[in-house]
Length: 518
Image (cartoon, rainbow, N blue to C red; front, side):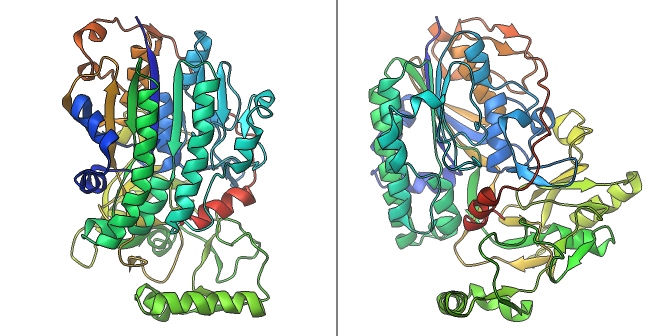
C-alpha cells in the first residue's frame, strides 16, 4: 500500500528534558502524538554527536558501515574537513527513494550538502558555502524571499529570542516547500533544541524554573509547528526523532592529555607553529595573547566571576586587540602516534600502533576516575567490538564518556576538569522517538536504535530496504493493516566514499566553535 512519511528532527532532545515540559500542558500537539502513537527511547550511535548520528539515521547503519565518525572527516593527509554525503559508504534512504521514483524534501539534514535525484534539499548549518542554500539551484528563485530570511546558526546560542527567530524562518520556508512541492517524504531538522540544551539542560534538570521557562518558550513554538505539519499531512506516518539527548554536564575529560601522558601525543607547544583552525579561532588574529594559568582560569565557572570576566575579555579584544585564553596545547596530528581529533569524535586514531599500544590506551582511559569515584569513560572498544564489523580506514578505538562527562580533544594541565559552568548540558546517548499519524498505534516501543528509523520509513512507504542495514523495521508501531505489508529487500551495495575534499572550512570551524562543539 505504501504511504507518505513526515520526519521532524529535534536535535539533542531527550525524555528527561522533554517530560517536565510536557507536564506543563503547554505542548498539546506533542502530547496528542504521544497519546495516540507509539514512543520509545531512541539509542544513538557511538559517538552520540550530530554528525555520525544523523548519518546513521539516514543510512540505517553504524559508523563502521557508513564511515562518518564526526562533524569533521580526518583526511588521509591529516587535515580535517566537514563531513559530506560523498563521504558516506552506504546509500541514504532518500537516494533509495529517488531510485524508485519517489520524491523527498530535506531541510537542514547535516550531511546533505549535495543534490540528489528526486530530492529538494535545503542545506544544513554545516554546509561550507553559506550562499548555497537550496538544490536544485533552479528552485532558489521561487523561494528567494524565504531563503533570504533563513539563517542556519545563531550568533548567540544562549539567546532564546534569536533561537525562536531562526526556527520561525526555518518553518516559514518548510511550510512553503511542504505546500509547493510534490513529495513522498518530508524531513526538517530543528537544531535549536540542541543549542539551548547545551546552555541550560542541566539547570532544567535541577529544577531551575527560569531555565525551564526559557526551554518552554522554544518548545511551545516547535509544538505549534508539529501541529501544523500533522494537520496538513493526515495521510502520512509521522516520526519525531532526536539524534541524541542531553544531561547535566558534570566534568570535562581531556582524552589527549591521557595520550600525552602515555608518550603518544606530540604537541606544537603553548603556541601553534602554524594557525591550526581546529585549535585557533578563525577571526582576525589578536595583536597579543595573555594566557591565564589553569588554576586561575577555572574560576571562570563562578556565577559572579563569569559575567565580569566575559566583559573584561570582550573589552580587551575590542579596544587593544588582546586575547585572553587559558593555557593549552595543540596536538600535532602529523607527528603523534595516537590522538583524538575533535571533541565530537569519541575516537582514537593510531599510527603504527600495535596491540600492546592499543591495550595501554584502553587501560589508561578506563582507569581515569572522576572526583566522586566513578570512571570518566564507560567503555572503550574497536569498531568491530562496538559495531560488529571492522573498519580498517576508521579509528583504532572508540570510547563512550560516562553520563555527564564531556569529552574534549584539547590538552590542558589536568585530565579531568570540573564542568565549564553550572547548569550546562552534555550529550547523552538516549534520545526520543515518537511514531504517529496514519496507521500508528498507541504503545511503548521500549529501547530502539537510531538505525531502526530508516528501514521503518522505507517499509512504510513500500520502498525497498537495503539488505545491509543494521536496523530493523518497527512493525509494532503500526496497526495490523500496515503491519501485513511485506518487507522488500534490495541490494544497497557499498558506495565509494570520496576522500578528495581537504582543508578545514573556516566557516564551519567558526560555527562549531561558536556553538561550543570544539
